[in-house]
Image (cartoon, rainbow, N blue to C red; front, side):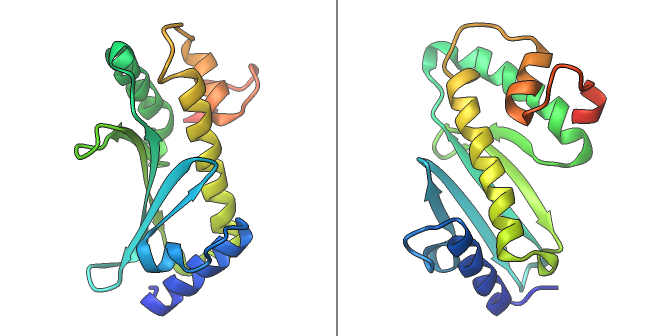
Length: 161
């Protein structure tokens, strides 16, 4: 289990590893922004002390591509959610697409590892913004997986899932 003090120290180390200007923002306010992507990280030792709740804001979905984007987010859930490695959804408050993941046993994480994970999530968000949420082209399920998960065409879908 993690204490709130450990959480704040982890956030500070993660922010330093990500080269953020404000090393206290993540621990104090529960969010960071890097490369235009907002990431929220929540911890409450009184309610659930064995995980961090991470939400990556993928941004708004253009109205004309909304239905197609929903279909693509469901496809991503098929690929990523089958092993509980996060799910894609719509934030009911903002209407933005978001990626949600529970990071279990955060007491085993250090700043560099968490920064690497958040960096990967930010990279995925940027790829989704460019290729899946704002375009009418229809990539195949293999192309979607390869773009988001940085795999080559020889990887199978079961390896990605």
